[in-house]
Image (cartoon, rainbow, N blue to C red; front, side, top):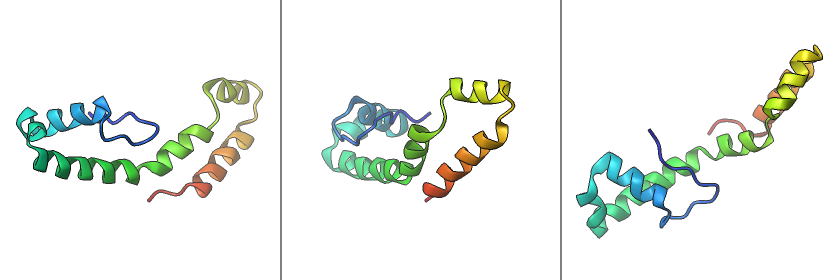
Length: 91
């Protein structure tokens, strides 16, 4: 489970502490050198998923998807999703 649930990266966010402790243990978090290394690793992982956060922000809402299904407008929905995937490709 990944605890990094931030819109903007903040190393002092509680999700960073949770992630380091869950992966490496409290002793690694308490050691400033190890913590800095783990924070750098988590930041790189966070940055690698930027495309996913941008896609999520632009994807149609659940309500829009339901309306598209009920209105038999799936082609437009799929086209919108494809445009967003093109705009924000995976790393």
